[in-house]
Image (tube, rainbow, N blue to C red; front, top):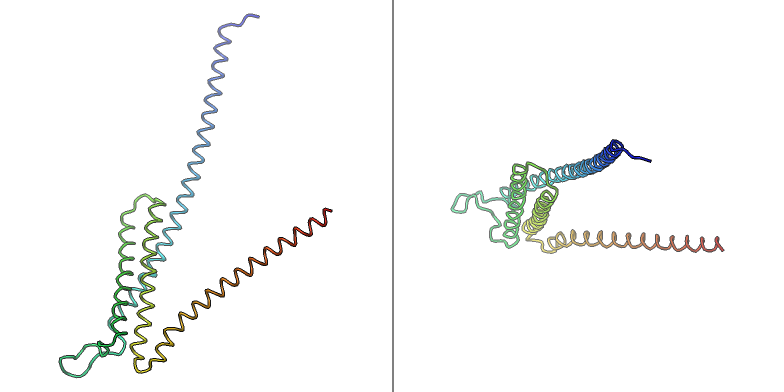
Length: 214
């Protein structure tokens, strides 16, 4: 059987078309994968942006509360005329000094978190999930420290006001710590009990299956 050159050319054309179609299919699969990755990255970026907005709200509230507490100090101010007029009454109290320091730290960290959010929002043009994650983690650390300092300022301010009753002041400081420790311990106990029950249920199911199979 004689094979003409035209047939060979036609076969080569068919092979070239099949290769091109395969490359197009591969390119389509790659484009679809890239689209899926871009959609997932955009979804993560939107979620991180919402988290950042929540952090901004919390930091703003902490800054507002600490700012107000700085000018309405516990114990009030001296109203009598003299060199100490307008000064805080409990200036020489150790607990009051701790309140002022912790309140200042809380306001500083909360304002720094707000400032970091504003600068990050202005600097970002293309959403990058890694960069957003680092920025959110940094702001979260600032907010956590601000909250802890605010709690310490509240407790120290309460102790400053209750300087005449040390037992009540100690009770007020110890009570929140005891409640937190109790909730933490009870939560761990409940989780361990649920895990133990889950394991026991699995063992019972395996035992019943083995008996049913035999």
